[in-house]
Image 1 (cartoon, rainbow, N blue to C red):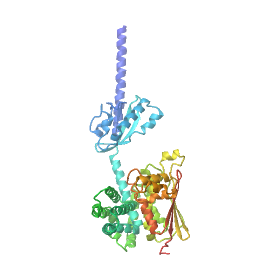
Image 2 (cartoon, rainbow, N blue to C red):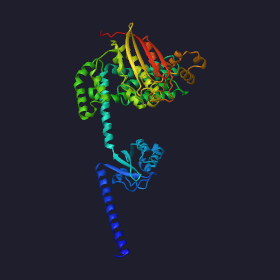
Image 3 (cartoon, one colour):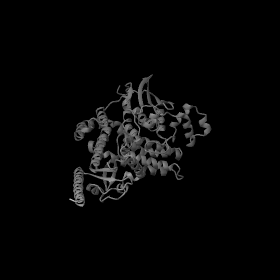
Image 4 (cartoon, helix red, strand yellow):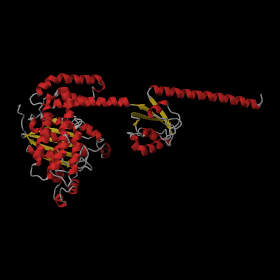
Length: 518
């Protein structure tokens, strides 16, 4: 065999080996595609310039109704409703850094920073990321549309159950609030408008009432009404600088919010369970006895369908609330103000320890103190929004990551002493003075004449808020003004002690009004 024949033989052998490896690679690719298709998943690869490579699974075309090969991945993923649309620059820079050093620990951590979900063709898509051996970024997609719909349905079931339990557990308080809202719209509103106050002062009074109503109905897990109150607050705020402000404008603004109608829409959940007679006076005990078994069955069915939630703290709390109907200890009047606080902290990216109300058992007439305890929602929410720092700030200050809010009650000299204390950033008296001047509430001369205690009490002034913008959490400057008004209605007092960087303490002293059951 001459040299040319030997070279031909070797070339033929290499060609056969190459074809063999190529077939193995194709078989592996087909098997991978089949596996991903069976799992309802798809995958593709992108280069550092974000261009999609041709090697992708058929499922990707189903996800995106197109072959994304050769396209920029962000153009593929950024459809209507996609969270990636607002993160294009971040995505580009992060992918570039990952592929510059693809197998470093830092790059593995950066993979977790990339968006984990997006929307495409009305589908909810989960995304996971991996770096291939040839330094391309692999994106694995999974259709979670049905899963998200089930989660949404589960949350709505839980919310409906929560709403019924809250209303049944605090029926008397709820009926009172229900009637208060009706009286406000159809009676008190007109009485306020007929007073001798200026139109601006009438607006301030309406602000406070609407703000407190919003917090109260949110505690009962109502779905539509809190948003209706928030939208109404926005409209009332816009009237502040309206030169056409008068009683007719205020009246129409309140009426056009259709608060009672929205409340009844929310109440359909309760009516479907307990009947419309539930809110009639004098039938509360009978209705509870008639429907206890039914609501128990609702819990049993819910936990049977969703056993993973049996130990979930929110559901345990909800069940405990259902089992604790009928107490009249003063501490029990505060419980409903705490229910939404963990969710509020989570919304603000803050962590707090579970809030417990501790202290003496003090039997009281709940009707006497309920208007006051309703307004305490503002104290607790302010402690989280303005007091407790976020995790990063607390770490820098060498504080525990989770903030602490303490609430204790004591009976002293025929008075109830209620102490609410947080370990947040405290109140800066100088900042209070500056804010009061910037809001036009006091002159520079007035605030400089105040000592620190007096300056801190500025937080009780109408329209006083240190928030930079109005949100559904704070910024109106009416919440704590409502608290002070109810304290004074009880002939009580409130003191503030605060140390910058250490926290704030509110001490309420209220005359004891014993329960008529004693």
